Length: 144
Image: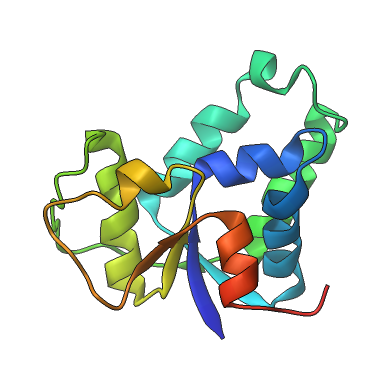
């Protein structure tokens, strides 16, 4: 199974109108086509961002429906403890936890809309890819 880290920006995009490829990746996670992983830092980030009502003003989903989708995603996620801080020194310090989680989980990819920053760390992991949702679907195809 394809193990991925689903960045918060992709989760948010999937819940907004016209979620496109982000929504397709989320659906693939919910169907079990991808194995999403989560750790303490990413769950805290998900909780924080999903609680911002203004961010979802244009969402077709109600707050309750968004919570149900989030809970369904969590039920599919594999919990991963991060025991070692790799400090990849990404341009946005707040994104370092994504690399650390991916390495700890032995994920093949981080799926993000922020490929430029997440892929620019000082510390490189050759087996870890940083992909947009579109690239993820192309690189790791699954039944739609």
